[in-house]
Amino acid sequence: MMPPYLFEEGGSLAVERYELLGLKDALNRPSDYSSACQELAAILRIAYSKLPKNVQSSIFCDVICAFRLLGGFETCSGIAAVYLLVQAAEVALPKQKKTVVTSEFKHAMVAHKRLCKARQYEGHFPGSVHLPHDVLLHIFRFFDMRSLLTASSVCWAWNAAAKDNMLWMTQYSIFFVKLNISSQKNSQFSDFVGEVDDALLKGDENLSTNFDWRGAFKRKFTGSSSWRLRPHRGFCRHCKCIIWLSGLTCNMPHKCCGSIKGRLKIKPMSVHMLVDYLLGEENSGESSRTATDVIIRKR
Image (tube, rainbow, N blue to C red; front, side, top):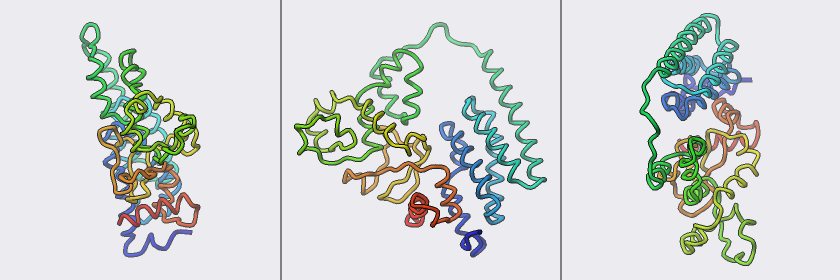
């Protein structure tokens, strides 16, 4: 059954919700292109037929935009996501739009192959350019967590810089909760990798430097089933907004009134939660209700 709000006032709320997802902007960012294609594919398969015509039109335009932008990105993940998108479009779209999508997809693949072939013949400087370790560290402060992991596989020097302990301390602070553990000083610190006190970190430089923050991040990340799914979005329980995780870097962490108090800031958000939010299915589960609540309160 279609939620009644979708067709109230010309579906203006549905239009607003779709625009708040920011898929068009995400398609223009290389770091989010693949994720945006996956979200579009899920929306097509699950929600397209339930949405008002004006929202369907916006979705169709974004699908075409995704194909036209493919030629500028040379990523395996982008190709895989585009295949998912075209398959979803063939299932969800009416015949006329399906024909347009198929044509755009073929043109996009031709353009992409030409780009890859052209780059094979581009000239390269002899040898490799080695940047100083401190320069790499400065650059990596502008990387999100996924980019930092990718950088670690480039070469030995990049691997060493990408494993810098202070980088991962900041990444840990960006993603996870901070609680006061000063009363637990006699306990094994590794037992409290999910409960790091901000004041303690600032007051004990040696603890901040010597503790294995990359290992703590890995244990915390893999210890949560919702994070293990590697979501591309999260939501902040304090400022009630959906955020792209690729936008969280050491130099640009998510900031709001709640983050200043050191409370839990970011929760992972799956693609299905986004679809539930778009459809306004507030009774489909706790996660969906939370996702919907995020945007409604932000408005």
